[in-house]
Image (cartoon, rainbow, N blue to C red; front, side):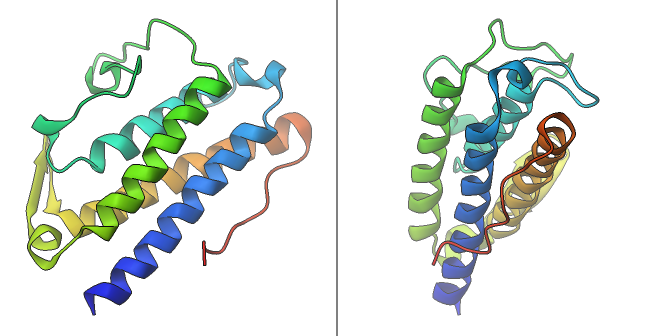
Length: 163
């Protein structure tokens, strides 16, 4: 059962990462830093990838930030990164997250899946955290697609899985 579950979660998680990548690729430069109803496009991408990476880490105390990404997302006072990240930088971060996702799910066993993950008020099994992480990613990818639809009247297509 666990092998089928891992295959399904991996397929859907990687499809969501691909959908985020497609939104990044479709975003014109004039929209990348343009504040909209939610936030800057680049910041939503950054925020999404930070939490994908963070929650794919075995435990919060073992998290190591990727390149220049830093830990500003852990600051609850809403401090933004001290620079605007470009597409190239965030696509590199996305590749890191995609690879980490594949490895994390591939190496998931019964013990790790049922291990309790705690961070702030968040407490759940690691398996549930993977699904929570996937939902968070898709939520923000939906925001990005809405921004693209509003700004350029187009958005990337839905990806059903990564088979």
